[in-house]
Each structure stands twice: as C-alpha cells, then as structure tokens.
Length: 570
Image (tube, rainbow, N blue to C red):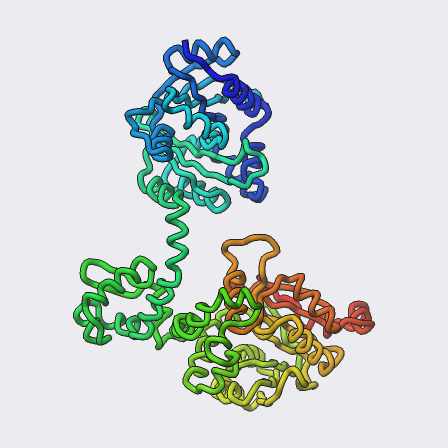
C-alpha cells in the first residue's frame, strides 16, 4: 500500500475544511479582494466553486484511494493528470514519461451544503523525485481554489479571464483531453492568505486561442521583455512620423510605391511596416498596407494630429529619458543635463523645436473638448488663461460663449503662436506678455491654469498659486486642469508614466487630488469640485478661502453658479 506523509495528510484535511468554510461568493471575495462588489456579484453569476486542490506525494499511486479513505477522505473518481504533470515536467526539467500524476476527487460540501470536491493531485514520488516533493510542499505552487464556468463560450470565458488577469497574474493552464476541460490558472503571490494565492477557472471544452494568450501572458520573462521593448515601439512610431509614412499610406498601398514615396529601403520598410502592423498602426492584407483608425492620428493633415507628439517623444524627450537613472539619483531633471538648459529655455532658443513642441501640446488638446460641457461660463465676463500656450483652451471657451472676453498671458514666443489660434475671436481677446511668478491680470472672473502646475516642483507651484491668489478678485474662481495620480495603484492611469516624464523633462511632477488640495490651501484656495475630462485629465475648481466663501454659500448664488455642471456633465 502507498505511504502518505503526515504533512500531506494534514494539508489534505486543511483543504477539506477550507471548502466547508466557504461558498462561491466568499471564495471570490477572499481570492480577489480588490474586485469591486459590483464586479464580484457579476462574476458570481457565471462561476461556481467546485473544488480546492493540492498536490501530495505518495510513493506509489496504486491503492491510494483506499489509504485516503482510512483517513476520512472518500475518493469518488480518479483520472490521469495532464496539465499539472506537464507543469512539473517544465518546472523541474524532468521528462514527462518519468512523471506519473493522477487526479483523485473526494466529495465535500461547502458552507451552504452544496456538493463540492477536494481535488488531490498525486505524484508518484520515487526517491529520485523526493526533491520535488520537498520543494512543492515548501511553496505550494499547485494549491488552488477552483471556479467552474458551467456554460462557457469563448466570449464569456475570455471576459472572465481578462477580468481576473487584471488583478492576478496569469499562471499557466492547459487542456486535459482525458476530461475535455480547459483550465486557466492565476496567481497573486502577495496575497496575505496562502490558501487564496492561486485561482483556477475551469470550463468544459477546448479554447485554443484563449489558452495561447493565457500561456503567453503567464511567462513573467515574456512580459518583462515586452515591457522593455516599449522604447522600440516609440522609435518605430517616430520613424513612421519622420518618414511621413501615414501621409503616404493615404494614397499608396504597395511596398514599392511606399518605399519610393518615403525614400526608404524596401526591405527595411517592410520590416517596419510589419512592426507597425503588430502595434495596430497599420493594417496589412497580402501585399497591401493601409492605416488603421489609430494610425490615422499620425497623419499631418488631420485635426488633432498626434504626429508632433511622436516627433517629441521619439526625439528630444527620448534623448532625455536616457538620463532617467541620473534624475532618480540626483532629483534633478535630465533634460537640462542632456541639452544644457531647462527644456522651456532650450526650446525657446530653437524656433523649429519650439514650433514642434507647441504643435505637440495642441495634439493633446482633446482633453479640452468637454471643458465647456463640464463648466458653465455663462455668468462670467472675463476668463484669464495663465500660461495658456497656443491659446487652444481659451479659444474653445470663447467660441462656446459669445458674450465672454478672454485674456491670454504667456511669454512672447508663446503669444506669437497663439495669435493664429485666437484669430477668429481676436475682437474679444487680449494677449498679455508676463511672468506668472510675478503677477497675473486682475480683471478676471475665471482663471485657468491648464497643464501648468505639473511642470514645476511644489515650491514653484506655491509661488504660482500665491501670485494668482494675490492678484485675483475675491469673487473669482480658479480652474486647474491636470492629470491626477491615483490614490491607489491603477495600471491604466496615464498620470503614472507622465509623472516620470515630468521628472525627466521639466523637474515637475503629477500629483494626487489630495496633493493639489493641500497646495491650493497653502495659497489660500479651497478645492470645491473635481470633474473628469478626456485623456485621463481632470478639472479642479477652486475658490478663494475665507469669509467671502461662506457669505456666497448663503447669499448670492450668481458666483456659486458660475461653474455649475449642466445636464450634460459627466
């Protein structure tokens, strides 16, 4: 009869008790605590707790069910393992033929009385394989809780997989042909409870595309390599922009024609086009190439063209990022060390570069599209845009509010660019040369600081905000437009990479809402509202703090309504 170690029997009993203490809802909550309550409930409608699994190490497999029965574990089925066997083979570089792994299933009820199982993977452990048993008991890599997807199809299973993969790292999987089932594993190595560090989604049927995607994402080395090639993607997009490839793709589709139009080597261009296809910039069908909707944003002749951004990110900003390590060590921006001057000074001295920079700022103006929907300017008379750059935001506000006047304050080289932007509203707009660390015009009802504060450190921000507070009329309000760092980790936040970008290129930083609230308060402002805009930006509405604020809240509503949100607010 097989010999089962006391340690394995203890682990087996613990697995059984884990099932008895839980149900589907509590397992999802315990295994994925960061999942919102709404998403947890939605997930629970499509999955069911079916088992808790562990790997044990008897010396032989024959007669194992009888031995386990003596310890109160009644095995009802035994089948060969494919997925776990293959994982052990890969992990320990042992040929598959030298590993014999069975799956034994024992019945147990969950805390609601619903029938579940303890799934026991058993590796026949000869003395030569004892080191595997020792290592696996120490790390419990195959232990997991399993959720079945009873009525899975590729769409449903793919959606569940993506939801879990956003919160737990994919950890392999496979297809067991003995049972016609697809299994997808996920792991959270930092989960405080070892029993819930690994989760399995199991579904009847074969889903080869999902398995391929899941297996690819399961290799941490593969994912790290993908991350490290991000700079290559930047350069590929920049090369396309420099060659004006997106412009030519509007009229030319064949490789020979594109090579002639761009002056490029045909073979090298073909390789670039292949990479751009993978990146989603180009669509390739046979020997024909066309732009995707994403790639069309790189054309120079479209509104909101992002070509200037590609030239900046793959040009001077790319060069400055080479000094990131030194910036982290010293706390000083790398742009000045690479180019010999702060990037505002450096670009002001190079008209061509300054023009590309202003165009790149214009390429991000999509964040302004909803400002006039979120903010009501109807009771204001004058809007002052402080360091308003090319004047795009002020133009949008004035165009949407014909009775409003505007003042754009910036350095002379920026005002020269803004003249053309503001030409359609020139009769209602004044351009003022100035330095926001010294003064701002004192005639406004609303003041704008758009993408300004993130260029500077906290000390300089205090100076800018204090200057605004000292010059603004008491009734005036301040709108700050910036990206906000998330208060908790958010892999989708654009503010996180932009924060490192600001560290390298301006010495500034992105900030959380709480950080901006504190800076505003130090300068005498009260943050009263925050609303989302496009491109992960936000508009922060601030008022002068003090008795006047209280008086307005109980008296005249005109200024309180200045920035109220209309029915289309979002």
